Length: 190
Length: 341
Image (cartoon, rainbow over all chains, first blue to last red; front, side, top):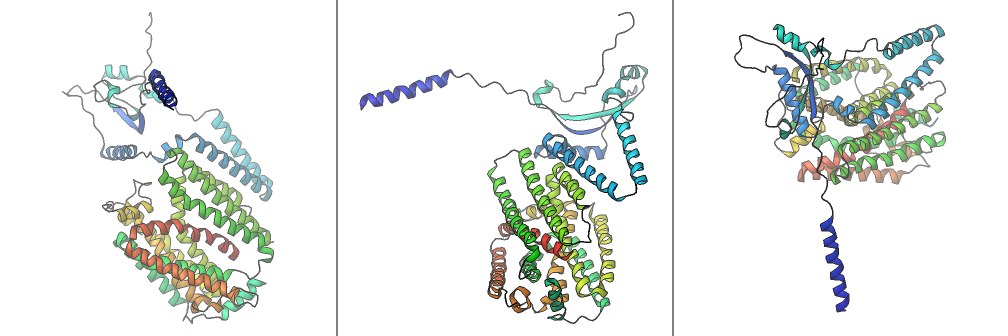
């Protein structure tokens, strides 16, 4: 009996020592920031100003507060919740596709052929416009491309901006950071 | 044939004499305006009182109405009713389990939204199946347009399951108005056009409420009951909208719903002598089930008494339980409304 108890103790101790050798869990990756709102921003140089100022409209501030409240409570805005769920988006898209297809077939069976031809033509033109990206907006950072030159000339620049909430340590002691999407442009002769 | 016999009986049995369409229209307009004023003025207080007084009785009247519409033998509608009752059971169980599963915190928010979307999809599929079965019985009606409509609704449901569920909360009270429309068509066809003109008042009143209340401050949520009422109206899902507006609109629609089931349908239809079991065709018929019907109605009456007792002892908990279980009556309306179309 004693031998059995001793064996059990030995096994348990061994287990502890084995656990002690288990590698530490990997350090969790830095928590990514969360985009809570998209709005617009104007960067305007002012020769008469003594301090840099950040001006926010009242309506934007209220929207930001609402967005932040949603973030704190674990809720996101409706478009954000849709965009952040690939599964639901795929199923919704599939069902929408089926709906339009079935509706098209039913329509084709009922309505006169001329009307169907017009609808098909409009649909084809619309699809072609989408496919060729003829109406596509410029890339996000397009409006900021002339910012350095505009600042040098004393002109303002206007473009879209995402307000992103990041962990405190991500800014290395600073309170805010404005990231402008600018690509380094080689000067002639470089 | 069965329904034709029922209708003949309905037209002669126990209908209270009502003067004319003018009185009917005046009553409707007064009820709508009064409900809107009270719902806008004191939404939380009136909500508590309205639910206490009318929630249980309106369920009892609904049960009685559905029993009135039930044929003694299913006949050609056998598949329809089997599908209806099977779906009713499964979906009620699924929706009742949802709050329990949510409290168990088994899933992430994303997985949870997929579960809700799946339940709502099951509901839409069941409705689609019922529509298809019903359309097979109606030779001259073409209901194929409901297929793309159902698919669009399913798609919207997957985009925002919570919002879709909230939409059911707001749309359900309006179904009672549809029942009243069909009922008037059969029992008082002369009043139908006047009633439909009255319905035009509804969007105007709703627009007025939205105009008046959209800028109001949020309702207090300083106790559990007030918080529950605002949440049930969608205050958490629609933070940009004033909770005063949400609760008022929802309460207004609920008051109309209760008014239709407790006042309008019994006064117009054959349920005026609602205490008499023999006015129910399925109980009156020689091959019917009088004892079963009587038992169901007495049990439902006891349920109403228990509900009142529960509200008196612990209003908040009883409210939660009631709205969880009440999904059964929401679902039950679908097959009986389809039978009337």
